[in-house]
Image 1 (tube, one colour):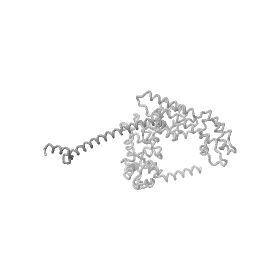
Image 2: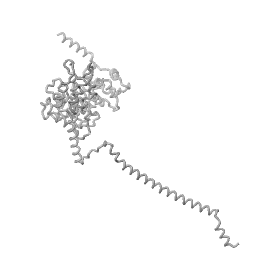
Image 3: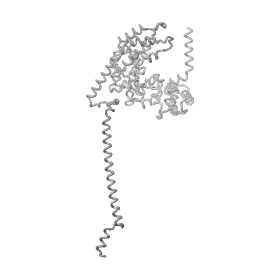
Image 4: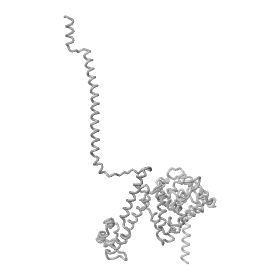
Length: 465
């Protein structure tokens, strides 16, 4: 056969040899490469499609989102003067509107006449009563401002043991007056809330009290030069007890909830008794007493107190160890204490039963900063008491006995550690702290039975005469 014919037939027959296999493999690889690229393209197409649908869907649901009320408003920055002014003005308008919603004196007087007119017999002594039916009638006639007070809930709160199912007209009227006063005070305090966040900073409260002074007849005798010291004295009590974490701000709600504002506004009473003035921290005699003590302690007249000067505070029997801790932990200037720091010190020592005062003293006693007092801490402070006893010629007392008494009084959860909460829960925190920091206080505690017996004898002698 001709070689040309053989070659023609060979080319016409399907190739099943190695070359054919290589050819098929190459074609398959090309197809796979092509499929991967197609898959990527398809994936990108799907992503683009779904992303576009999602964005389009968000646009379609914007109307729904608008029905959700906005709960966060960014505060204007310091350089956004116009926004700040707008915010202040809007707050002022809001507070004015709230103020107009409150009952004024004429409306309160009208309410009293309506209540008195609809009283329900019989009277209990001189106290006028009203039943629920007449209560609702007064509510209808009193006007829309009074609607919030004439509810079944308010009536039930004031309903006690009356066999006719009535409440006292005077109690209800006092309730209304108290509510109106609280709202008025809340609005008044809010006017000084520069940040508009529901709290007052120290400077805000200072401005409030400074402008309040002319409205308090009991402070008429104060010299204007003393105003700044009076304001500082008044403000410190609020911040000492209501700002235990020393954040520099107090919630307006906390101011309204505590009794301090009542004590301050009690000075509106022109006939306030001398005893009430002496026990009221905000009275003129009290403020002058505290400031006078500070001036008397300041022997070098530099306006500050050194440790030596402070050691003469009270009965001058506080231990040097405790005073060292005061100057280590409290804010001082070149090792001396200013009037504001002194006020915290006085408030703590004069109110040792209060949790805030115990927290202040506990921090000083916790020399290792562990959050609890152990035998070492107690011994550290009581050794100074023992040294003072020797100096004054008194018989020394065993620390072991005092330590056992302290743990028996406090009854801590951990028998070897006394926490601040243990002191507060025991209701013996004032006694325990006094024993550890003041010789006179320890002597009084140690001789308490003899002192009680002596008091009883004196009382009996007075009765005989």
